[in-house]
Length: 280
Length: 283
Image (cartoon, rainbow over all chains, first blue to last red; front, side):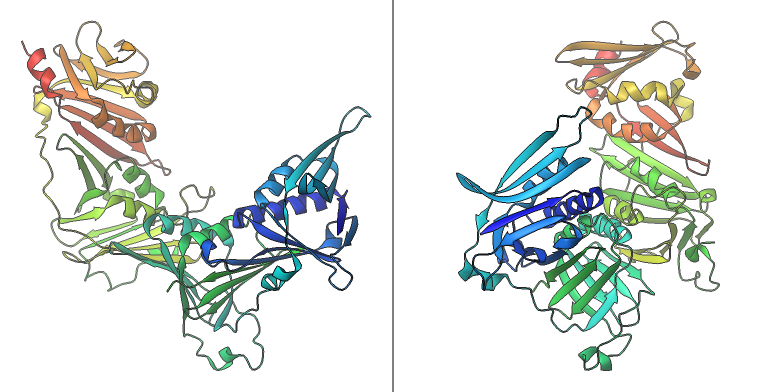
């Protein structure tokens, strides 16, 4: 098992930092899957996390100038490790304006993901900062639980409005209620709703548009005005919104009535899928 | 013109109160200045809205938002009164963010059908609309401090900046704030008596910060700091403050608050003196 990779391009370095900051906001611990052409940050359906799942994918060649890996065997050419994304994000803080960044799987008394950052300096001598992030290697037999979640057939698919507006609305709603209802229809309308004994607040977004329907999808025959809804934990939703520092190029919301809401975000080099289950 | 302030004819008759505002912050800022309790009583007349908050039957804060501040303001009855949760109201009013980008405004339309009905808020920013239905409660009688300008003994008007620092650094280990107002030295003095000793802050009557000084006789009154501390919220927002005491030692603090459009609103705090001290200071 071997992994070493290097970033020398500043834009790529900043992008990678942004991704790890986002992951740090979304998950306390997560799985990193390393395969020959992809990196995945994975959080899957643990009840302790409120059943939230995350699947983040980056093409390694969009980030790394050098990338070498050897999985646990030839037929299973992959590595799964568990890490605390906060540690990665903290290590990358040093990497602003760095000349180069190296990532390596090491074993220093315990297994580590070692981040070496070569800093710019005025004098010719170079300085290097090294962070050892403790990790756990996940054995082969547990991999089957860490596969890409299947996206359930949704009742309504709709593009999300500007995330920043949604975030400020949800932040205020969180002061009043613990639960939030997201409802949307195929007519480009999405509502965020809270209801308590004291107050009902509904924010209406419209003209959002839906992606073209796949033939045979059950929403084909659906009434355009008919709302699909899920009631979710408002903190999970806010956590997801707070993780988005840049507005994505594409942001899609898929609602399976009363079961789950699935967010599908596409940034330039990163895709993020986030699932929040409905509260019973 | 923002969507919500456009007048729809005929739909107003059923409401006893209808008010529209192009910039919701002209209302929310003033209400924030009195938010030290969640229970608030609203009175609306043709002149505007008064919102009252009280604590411990010893302090009362009133925010006045004149009808002219609103782009549209209609009251069908002589007066409309209801009680509402101020914290919830403020969260709703600032639903699009409390520190928005400069140049963006949230428009508000506020409707109340009358006794037993909820207060309806329609907020709009950038084409996104939020509808809030806030349940109202039975109005409670508010305290009458019977603070009458004919009984006022001493009065000073200060520029708020002069008082801001003093209030933000009040020695909170002191139970009371003692206010001395006198036609003679020290003219206007704030004193605290805390763990680390006593502190006195004097404002000379010819200070640049002193806009008016009308003191007729020497008065020394003590007020519970815990009751006065909430008024700091109003002080921070205001440009001028008028400090008055009457013959019973009751204190009135009037804050003048200028909104983003240059209009003036008022916030008033009444506070009764600390009882022990009344008996001591009276000859």
